[in-house]
Image 1: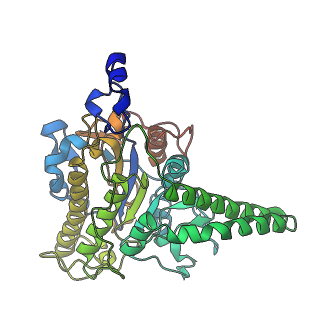
Image 2: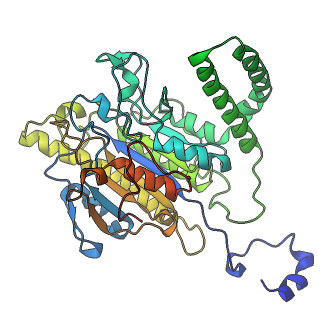
Image 3: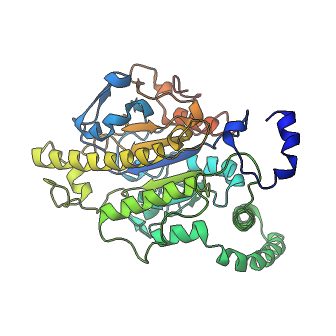
Length: 430
């Protein structure tokens, strides 16, 4: 607005709404990062894309994305570190970290991409990140290693895996119920004071562990402050001021389809209200016990067993249909985001970087050399869609998934020169 209009309306500005059409430099919507992961790979004969733009050709598994071609990029021949074959556990929990896991009884990995970003964007939101799943995490040991290796891809530090939340009501309450946080405020002061006294009695690694704990306490303090004092006096405003869904019932939905959709809706709600800008959702944990007999023509066997198809036609057909079902969930979320107006001529789909795929290619051979991976959204305008980026012809050091993760972190505003085993930003992405 020019100076004359501003002076004439000065007496009424306190009651006027914010008019985007009158703002010459309207604040832009924030960029979000999300990761949707399904376990145990894909039918390798039915996962492919070629061409570009409207002429992009999609294999049967990717057909649910037919009307969204301009909004995603298919990535080929990227892999995580050198763990490209072998047992399951090195090929799952390191998916977002690139760490080389060891067979230790105490979890040992590396900080994951989502948590690196959350440390940066979490300063602006009540909840730093959402770590969600549809299939619950396991406890104890499996195959001589911590069972959490099969259940999470989010790590807040080298020795701190984050167990995903599977209960929709708990997710909803974390986003909107601040009463428990208010009660915790006085407790935190006492915890910090006692921790400082205890530190004088500790040495070496014990001091490091306590420091990590105190860091978590400080993060909780910040979360309480943000969650109980939200004020937006200027700039960009979220598309929703109040939840547009009811608080979910207790427990988990018995139907896998309902559970997945509810978790996707909660993720979308959190982004629409700017409660968080980082979220991961695991559709199935590694060595998944989930069954998909509700899909036409699909064997009523566990996903893990179907993934070991041995080229059996019936298993391959079931495998493909399950993969397609997961792609349908991506298409659903993309369409929901496309319908959210975020001002400045953009939709939420324009302002997101959404990573989708699996932790291996062919589940029968545990082949992790060519991760099935799609990047949806435009990252605030920095990432074009309608493309297939094939890194197979390139040198090995340009095929590292951590190059992609470094690029994503930088697009999210994180000041970072290296991530995991990255050799530089991923060529051709931005």
